[in-house]
Length: 354
Image (cartoon, rainbow, N blue to C red):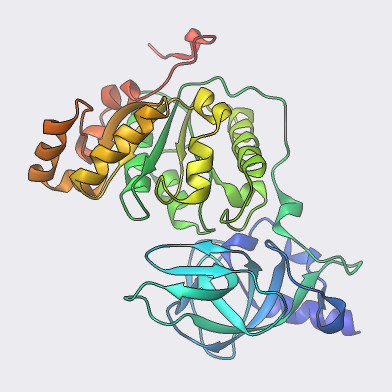
């Protein structure tokens, strides 16, 4: 009877994006109190909204924004967050009162935030969500399968100076251009904080399938080690190949100096598989420094893009310092240009479309 009551309570709660791969019918009970030492990143939690702060909406599994009210119960996943424009947050050591630090559904203890960001929405965890047997459910339990497929298809990676530099928008326009050129484009965002907005934009722009790290079993990637970062890359790229994609656009979140982003970009295997990069920047100095850093790492920087392209003067400053072409969205979307950004693996020249 207790389990049925808990299952009904869970089913009545508002679900968030990062929990979308977990079937609701498997969420049967709650574990809390003395039965839990501390939550892990990725663990599902039923929480009550104590005070609405910065996040006034939660992104549902279908992408709709659901308004949040004090007293609402909501299903989140624990995760660390790194967002210079919003919150720095970590998974707490117990089921203590903490915060909802991302609209996609991340529970964590906020430890700092941007001066223009309101105080975080306060939540009180009710209990970790478990299955019939009482096993706590983690998003990693529902990751896409690993396979032995080789991702030797044309590809380009999009990286940037920071969050909100224009990476996703640039990636979406590249996807659109490749789609118009006849490619079945697979898109993957391999680092960041779980949220659906970037995936929806990639899908809307023409991606045949769009995946992110939540599909590889991570609610967020802050504090994820190098081995697991490459495992995310492997799982997602292999899944795109399994679906028949013949071009891949990769987005790496945040800026090149963010710890996990930098570790991935410095990884020899990642460099070998995704040597072509488009760099998104907010201003000319960041664009120039970023291109130089990536070039020193051995990458071929195909183009500069991002918010900086909105300014003709800033664009001119870049072209006076480096030879890398600067492409605004109107150019990235052109099939001939988007195709020119790709790296074509030498072992599979037949993949290049006429």
